[in-house]
Image (tube, rainbow, N blue to C red; front, side, top):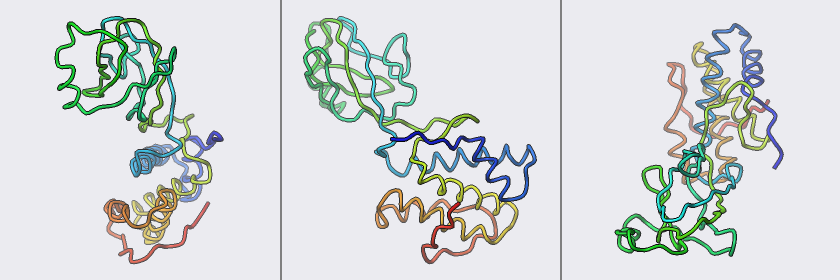
Length: 231
């Protein structure tokens, strides 16, 4: 998948130009809104193709519990939302299956006396826990979904560039709303329509998307899907 070249700083410049206000305080607000709208887009599905990642980490003998976000004591994946299905032992390609906490506790409540090739895992309380405890060092391959991380000036969102207009039109509308501009309603409609286009589902997510309108007094009722006003 091609890398998105639209950084936070570039996006803020585009919005500032469109609302004719390039002052530093306004651009600071725009960047905050860009992060808020990006986080909103990320949240609409947990399994976007563009938030998939891969990695590796090594177990320790007789240690069954590992921190997800600590490199020294665990996996060290700061943007991990959740693993994608099975983990895999690199040496022999054996799959390690996910189970619920209840299933895990029923099978491996006391791990003091059991070590072997791990067969299952559970994620709980920012940790990954294996059952049984690894009896040696194993390199584990994993695939995962990334969570949203706040964008800095040089950072770009992970989605394909074809969807940048959705992000931009949502923030432009938000800034219009702050300025009591009635065109904000149309921009919001385009933003919602764009998210539906990304999700590919106009039924199940419609109610959830509609619950987050702009907050200003000039919001107009949205009775239909406005055609996208693309950048």
